[in-house]
Image (cartoon, rainbow, N blue to C red; front, side):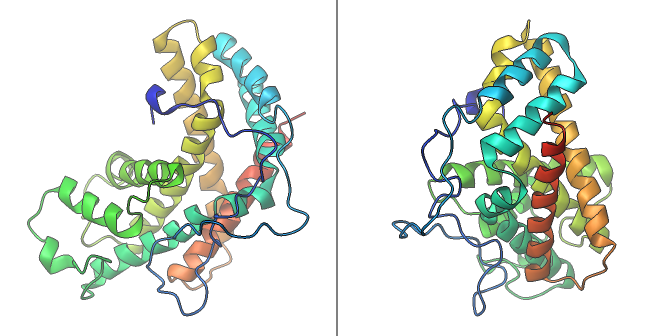
Length: 276
């Protein structure tokens, strides 16, 4: 997301899972391809997990050391602290990123609808016929607007950035001849996987990215260190997707949302193992 998107991170003494965070999978009766909608002013349930003081302190210390030295051990340790203390572990991460899971399901549904020639494949009412002949950038914009429209939240901003990356550079790096209007099942699942990884990375960068930025000796090193973190996140998420997909579940927007949720939980559990 770049240096301009970094922040000082989520504060302490607030719920680890905000009351407006949606369920990872759309409730029964909801449209499978409809994007997640934040629910403001939701009553806080009892026994809610509250973020501790200096929740990202240990993560920033280790990632600051990584920025200076390039130590892979410091990077993994910092991400481990981030996952366990900063976010609260795998199950909390999966709840906190419920919108990511639901967007992943909506993304799969939109791409599948376009590939099959479904009428009104996108929430806007557009389909393969109406998008035919448009530029790649215009098609990507239509898909992003369909599955994660702007709603004024930071979560939507990070998700839209992740969608753009997954549908453009990352897809073309892996599948140079991919046709966005007629993607294979393998290509669709790759996009969902990569979207998930990029959204996890974007959230991490927002919360603790400044520790890398402020401690790297120069801008070139900073960007290199950030790429290392991004690649580590991508590799970890990809491994979790491979394991989950071995179960061979039938695929539709709801089951894909469930796969994304499970992948997020397992990814943060793997991250946390490197904390010590």
